[in-house]
Each structure stands twice: as structure tokens, then as C-alpha cells.
Image (cartoon, rainbow, N blue to C red; front, side):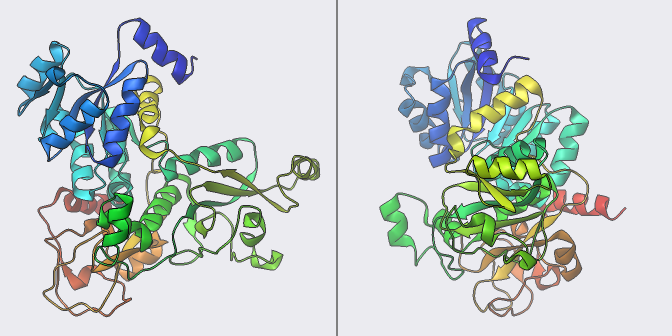
Length: 432
């Protein structure tokens, strides 16, 4: 079987390319478009953004002639433009997901509601879907994966995003027969659960990033969501709510992430966690019962045992995403996807401050809540609200104290939202 690189070159040589429909032309989408323009056998055919100028600018930064860019507000107009070799920009998701001349849809919005809609419509239209949107995946990934399987298309997370990079390391270690103890990632800033877009406004401006996005990293929500995605893809759980998150370097990872009876911090193995001090890398901690392999691991400087670390010091996020699209199209395989059935972990909503009845919640990267990972069973028992169900239309029915887990009983949810309807269906199937 040809590898992806060779297969992409073969497609290019035959005059064919994998046609990508990209939703979201922000920082991640813009970089992705430029990367695709450097690759063989793949192209960003249709770009969707609520701001058409973002989509136009992203294509022009990638070297596309302005005369080759056509606005389309309908599938018919988009089809006609593509038939003449033009690149299409649109502000309508339906154009991307329902257009015949698109092979793979990529969602790069990071907005749970948009991601759920994009994935569902793509699957129903018989298209592969790549989710650079772990926020949607951890909320309704199980049902979307089942839908994709039934439709004969691929539902997958993204290569380069930390969950995808961790899954690749896990597959490497697991395939070699090691016992994987921990799958984890680094966090590149101190955890501050009280962070909000106002306190981080100046830092965000200096970094050139959206304050809400930066908030989701600093308050830990992004880390919780990413490790929930990993847990559901490999069947691991957090060792405790919120995980441990110790401060350490790469060399000390195997020692710190060992069982308590071995001098470490873990109550059990096969867990997900994060570390402060090894960012932006990802890692898996492994062990083995084989005396011969232990000696080999020491010989190749992987540690003194009983645990050893495989560490990847980088992840290229959206730059690697096209490889997941190619893998889905060429091999019909996901990079990372939920195992199916009952999830293993959940990212639940916790009050960031004292909140009053009647107050609207603002979701990921905002002022009112942050995300915390828990086991799926614990979250279910507590009736804890999945973070991804929160949008600006969700209102509190009761006062909530700072640090309190927000439950279904405390809120009036947006029952018209697609992600709510998908989650309702997912939960109903689990109850059978």
C-alpha cells in the first residue's frame, strides 16, 4: 500500500486532487490553506467564514490570484465556479457541506454548535469530516462517529492537534506491545481558573490571538477538552477530576507519573493527564514486564524504569490537518475518533465566579464557566452539564457558587441548538 505522500503525488500526476471544503478562516484555517497550497494532490476548494474577507484574505495570503476567487451564496453558484477551476468563498456552511465537488470537509471553527452542524451535514451528504474542533467532539463525538460509520464515511479528529499527536504516540507504543500507563500533554502557561478575556486582553493583543481563545488555554479548559478527546479515543480515564497536572520536565515524567506504591502520584494506570513544564510537547508513559526489553530501554536511554517516556516535542496543529483529510480520503481511516458506545470521560462546566439565577452563561473561554474533566460515569451520576452544550442562550435557573459544578437541573438549555439535539440522541441511545 502506498504511503500518503506517494499517493498524493500519484493523484497530482494523474490530474486529480482531494477537494477540501474548509469551515473557518481564522488563524488555524489561514495557516491550513497556505499549507495545502504547498502540497501535492490536495487543494482548498471552498472556504467558508462568517466574514467573507477572512476567507478571501486567507486564499490571497496562500498565493491565489484575486481573479481566481469567486463568492458564492448557493450550491449551484459554487459548483459552477469550481467547474471552471476557481476557488470559492462563502459565508454559508450549507454550500460547503452539500456541494458535490467537495470530498472532505474540515471544521476549524472551535465553536461546538458550528462543529456539530458541519459534521452532521457533511456525514448526511456522504462526505468525510475532519474536526479541528475538539469542543464539539467531546460533546457529541460518539453519535457523530456512529452516524459516519453508518454512512460509510470517516469522522476524525486532526493530526497535529494535541489529541491526534498523542494518539499517534499511543498507537506506536501500544503496537509495540508496551503497557501504556499515561497519555498526556504539556501545558505552556500556569493554570488560572479565574482567567477571563478582560484579564488577558493585553496579553492576547501582544500575542495576536483572540482573548477568548487565550482564556480557554489559561483557565485549563482547552487542556481538559483535549484530554477528554484522548480518553474517549483510547478508553482511558482521568485519575481524578481535573487531573493532576504536576510541574516537571521530560526526564522526570516517568518517575512522577508512576503509581503511588512506586513513589509517583497515580492511583491507577491507563489514565490521561497533563504536565506543567513540557509544553508544547505530548507524551506517553509506558512500562513492560519483559526483562530483556527493560534492559534495551535503559540501553537506548529511555529511562531507568520501571516506566519510560515517549515524547514528541512539537505538534503543528492546523499545518498537519490536511494529512488527516488525505488519510480519510485515501485509506478511509481516522487519525483519532471516539471508540464508540459509552464515552470514558466528560468535560463538565464549573462556575468561574458566583453566578445568579437568570444570568446567561457564556461558554468556553468566557467569564462565567471553565471546563473540568471527569470520568463519564461520575459526570453522569452528578447530572453534570457538558461544557459544549453552553451557548449564549443558556440561562441559569438558580444561584451557583464559585467552584460549584453546574448541573442540568440548574439551567435552561437551548433546545433548538443542533448540538443539544445530537447530545439528547446520544444520551438516549446510551440509556437503551
